[in-house]
Length: 237
Image 1 (tube, rainbow, N blue to C red):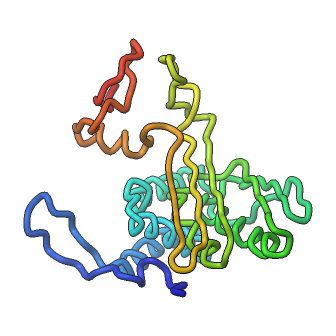
Image 2 (tube, rainbow, N blue to C red; image 1 turned 135 degrees about the horizontal axis):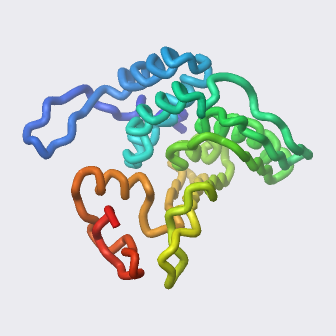
Image 3 (cartoon, helix red, strand yellow; image 1 turned 30 degrees about the horizontal axis):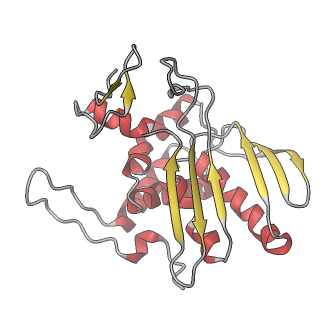
């Protein structure tokens, strides 16, 4: 069993791109230090900064690069604006032996989710299941980044997220956004490496939509609806 973080399991050193189309490659350990240093410079509590940096890096290394370190700049702006809280603890709204509801107080989402998993893990081992619901969390980044540790501990883990304040998905046959992409991730233990699944209930994500739109690119398929409800591969509609 290998409990080391993903960045320690195969990240290569920086390599100059051979063509303009090749992606730059950086040492993951150095990226971790870089991200943590920037977050601490923005006055994020050191323990929270370390968890956020690790989670963003894990997202990149798991292949979800729209939800990895690309988010760091936005997180720093949110800290500067005061819309992401720098320190504190979640407020417990309700708690029983295996269930809890927390108010995240706008603390960084990656740290809140890790805290919730740490709360739930021993209870799930003792009672067979445990659940935590968090309201008023900040963005939680890549859901797959939370799966490996509990799955390697022999637990099935489910993580889901919704943001009703930012509707971007129209219901079938509609043209008005009502839902959010509502991602869901699941991790399952096996005799070896765990099975990890991270998908969106929508056909694509807001992060991928923004990346293609800002890059002037089109989707591989008709993933969006125009104002008449017609499918299109143009992410700018």
